[in-house]
Length: 130
Image (cartoon, rainbow, N blue to C red; front, side, top):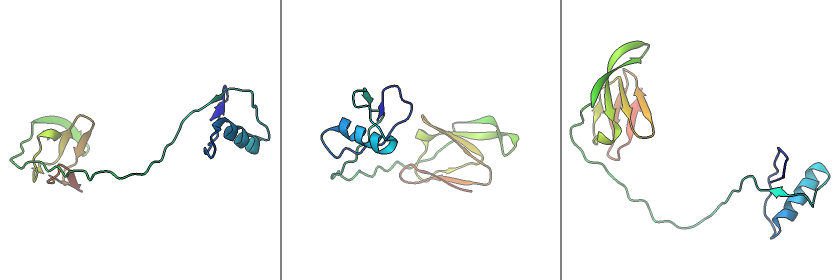
């Protein structure tokens, strides 16, 4: 929290029903004064909760023959090379990838250098040993 117009914040633990009073108290303790008629801003809030949740189902992917989508030219290991290109959602369990390679997906691109062992486990995780 902070007073409107200030550029620094104070962490305030809500130990009472009056959050503004807690902020004024924390400000007075830290800086020696409080501006009790000034507007207060909540910059961020944190919440901690506890509860019981159902166990997530383990989702295994199917097995099959994984082929690279294509070959592309890329700079890998400091040189220009033709490397395999894989689409992450087309990889099967147990697949061993040809390296060097590039694995693409909606949120990331993984570059696997030559000499690495890359494979896909039964849950779809990409395991890379360098």
